[in-house]
Image 1 (cartoon, rainbow, N blue to C red):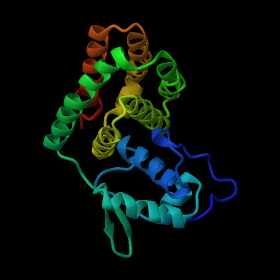
Image 2: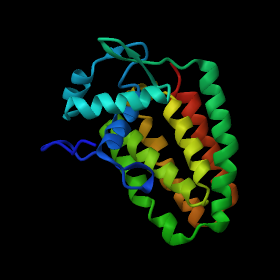
Image 3: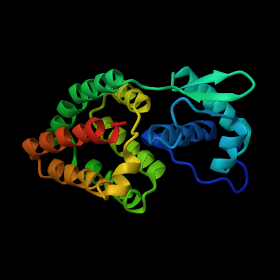
Image 4: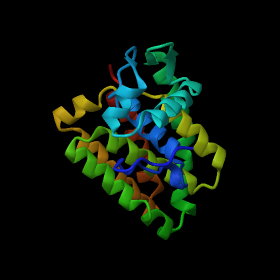
Length: 225
């Protein structure tokens, strides 16, 4: 796999495990796609995306092929990659499945997760707030992914984390830019700190309320076209 080019940005490592450079490029592209920075139906060439992200074209092309296998983009011969569109029905289905999985899992963590492991997620929660305050949507999605998958990982079920990660990747947060302009993204970001505090307080009712409200934002606000 290609080494990281000199001067390339420090790309994130999602899910709490060491990632190859190609995977980290894919993470950054996926975050841009989820955040609506890459528009559905638009065709993007590897060189164009490479220039945009400050990396070489080869890992971008390889990463986009990975995203094509996930159904997030389609290859367009001699042109590049077209971002696939997601229907309202699909978004509703993704949110419903996430609620069925994530809410009871996180509520159970109020009983089972140790305080040290929960506190270890606070830096990611703060990064989410900082990214929201700065209006940096890609950084927001990256930190949000690290937080939520890291939290779910505390349940000890690797397959559960993979399923939720796939559902998150298939979602589209088209409304993030509107939330930034309306000054509402910061309040949503701060829910991550509220959730951590409720977990540390072992308040299952509060955990369920915050998680339900937070996932409602994912569909009701962020994914609105």
